[in-house]
Image (cartoon, rainbow over all chains, first blue to last red; front, side, top):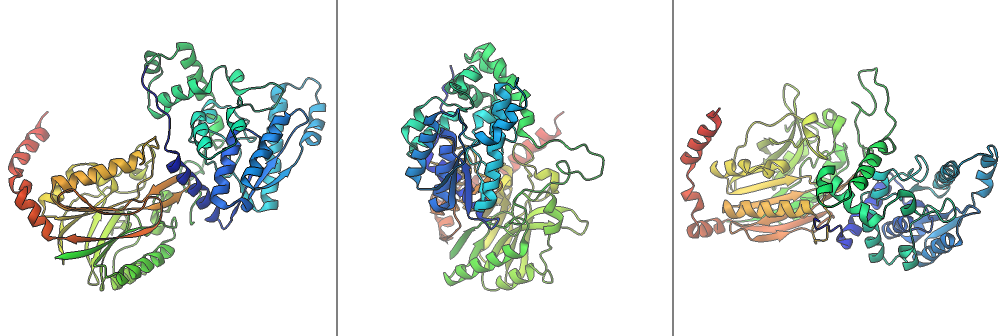
Length: 275
Length: 283
C-alpha cells in the first residue's frame, strides 16, 4: 500500500490556525469567542486554539449536558476548562428539549440527537450575543466530508479553525497542545445516546478512513486507484457515496436564479469584504 | 553600486484602497529612515487579493491626478517604489498590475500575464490577461517585474533576462497551502525553490515580496527573500507576520558571478528562436 503520512508540523499549524481566529474576530471589531465544549477532542482543540489566539479571559466555554449525557463528558470538559483557565458556563438542555420529545412518543434516536444538537446551537448563538463573542466551529475535515453532523446544529459556527484537519491530525495537534490525555484517548462519540461511538455508527475507524480520504481528496486519487492501493472496494464505495450524498450539508442553500445578478452565483464577495 | 532594498510584506484591508495607501505611506517612511533606495510591496498591495466583484470599484490609474497615486508618486521622489494595484485601461479592462515609480514618475507598469484560474484561484474570471513581459531601465540598472503566477512559468523570467534585466522584482499574494510534517508549507517551499533557481540560472538578483494576513480562510505566508546572482540567499523575512526586510544588493556581484559563470554570454537565443519557431509551426 502507498505510504500515507498525514502528520503535520504542529508548530506551523498552530501558528496559522491561531492567527486565523485572531484575524477573523478582531477584523470585525470583536475580541471574544464562544465555544460549545462537549468533552470531546474536537471542541477541546478548538477551545485551546481560541484561548491561545485571544487569551483565556476572552473565551467562553459552554457545557450543555442532557440528562443522558455521560458524566465523563462533563468531567472532561471541566478538566479542559481548568487547564486553560477560560471562562465557562453550564446550561443543561434537558428542560428545553424534553417538551419537544414528548410531542411524539415514536420519536427516533436520530431525531432526538438532531434536536439536541440544534438546541445547543441556539444556546451558543444566544451566548454569542451575551458574551459579545463569535461562535467557533468544532467540525473536523473527516466528519465534514462524511456528513457526520447535524445541519444547523453542531455544524453551525461563525468560523471553523479545524475544518481542514482530519481526525487523526486533530489528535496529533491536540497532543502538541497538551489537551488532557483522557480527552484524546477515549473513543470519539457525539454522546447523543448512551454507548454511542462515531466509529460504530460510521462503520469504520478514523485511522483507516482518514487515509482513504487523504488519497481521494487531497491527492486526487480516483476510487479505483484507491482500491488498487489496497483499500477494500466496499469501503471505498461506502465512503465515496457518503461524500457525494452529503454535499448539501457543506453548502449554503441554492437560490433559484431569475435576475441578472444573484447571490451566490454572480454577486461574489468574501466575508472579509472591507476589513 | 550598492542598493538598499526593502521588501515590505504587509497585510491589507480587502477593498479599502485608502486604508492600504496609509499603510504604504507608513512603511515607506520607515524604509526611508533606514536609508532605503527601493521598496517593493506585494501583489495587489493597494487593494487586497480575493477581490471578486470588488475589482471595478478598487481600480486606479497610475497618474499624477489620481487621488491614490499622487501620494505614491510624490513619495517616489525620495526612493523608488514597486506597488501592486488594479489597473484599468482606457477601454475599461482590469489588470492585476505592479508599477515601478521613481523620481515622481511612472517608470513601468506590468500587467500579470498568467492568471491562475484553477484550484482555489479564480483570477481569469475577474481580470484581463496582460500581454507583454518587458524589462525597463531604472537608476539602478535594468529591472524586470513579475507577479506571482507569472514566475510559476519559466518563460517570463527567461524573457526578462534576455531583455536585459539584471534585477528581478517579484511580488505575490501567495496563499499558504500544503501543511505536512516539514518545517515549511509546500507553497512556500515551492516558491523559494524556484526563485533560488532563477537567481542561479540567470546569474541575477531576484527579490520576492509576498503578502501576509488572512482573507476569509486563506492565509498569506510572507517570507520575503532576496537571492544574489550566485543563487545564495542574502536576506529573508519572517513567515506569517508583517515586516520590512532590509537587504543590500551589491550590483558588482553580477559582474563577479558572470566572470566565473558566463551563462548569459553563452545563452543561444537564436537556437531557442529556431526551435520555438519549429515547435509553434508544427501541426
